[in-house]
Amino acid sequence: MYIIKTIVALVIKFIITFIASWIAFTLIDTVPLSWITLIAVTVTIINYLLGHLLLLPSFGNSIAALGDGVIGAFTAYVISLLTNDFILTRNALVLFAVLIIVVEYFYYMYLKSSDKVAL
Image (cartoon, rainbow, N blue to C red; front, side):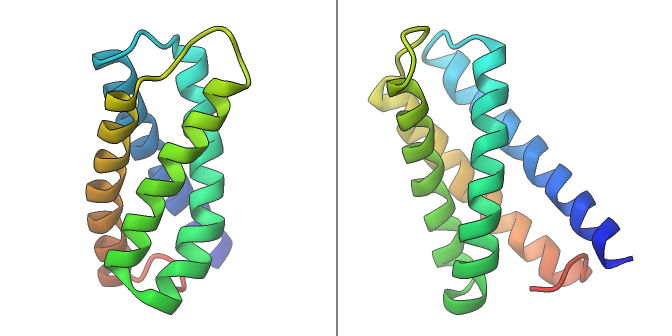
């Protein structure tokens, strides 16, 4: 049962990360949907491993959400450096980081209150 709850939590995390990346990278830049999906998958995995499993238990909700935003923006920036298909602007990266911080803050509050996965 724990693994199903964790998978559901990861799917929710992916969806909110995808929406945040879609908003930030299509509103300011013209990033193709395939790259937005790759960014969302990569950021979801890295933020789960670093933010959810390391930062959240050690430092709490606010620091974990802040860390997720910074890690997410940095990850998106690195992905943009590895391709010539798109370039992310500073404004898009900042908007993405802010969206991730806000969404992850409430996401972690939801997880703690609903007892979906072990924190």
